[in-house]
Amino acid sequence: MSRYRGPRLRIVRRLGDLPGLTRKTPRRAYPPGQHGQARKKKSEYAIRLEEKQKLRFNYGLSEKQLMRYVKKARRITGSTGQVLLQLLEMRLDNTVFRLGMAPTIPGARQLVNHGHVTVNGRVLSIPSYQCKPGDEIGVRDRDRSRQLVETNLQYPGLANMPSHLEFDKNKMIGKVNGVIQREWIAMQINELLVVEYYSRKI
Image (cartoon, rainbow, N blue to C red; front, top):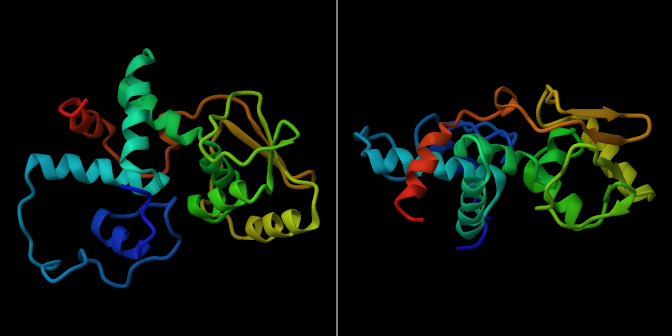
């Protein structure tokens, strides 16, 4: 199944606040659909599935991509859930979003895809690129690119920049100083339930 391209507020109503997906807030507080207001008890599987879907929709991944990230996180030493979140947070599209250069992660992905973003001075159009400590993320030296990012910087998606990033607004260059810490991850998620969900599938 490919990336979701449908109504984003529908997803927010079902799963709760996803800061990377959209800046809009739903008018209705209950889940979408005919039976949205009917309260039914969720099974353990449904709870795990919901946590997994939060990750998938917030970071804009397909099921196949997310499974690949879970397998990769398992091979790295440390807590699988935490490593998984770090891998997703250090993607180039998410880093561009967290630097304030785009209002949402889909917006950041579009900036990267259209060649407006540079990494270490070179144009890079791969949203899934894993940013590493020491990487410099800048804006392509073109009027169109600078205008787009300048407009976005006036209305950043999230108020606080994580401690592992720094951004120079005059030069329009962001720097990755380390790997993100768990407390700086903006969404409400229980990553252990995601790992449990995949432990039966992988």
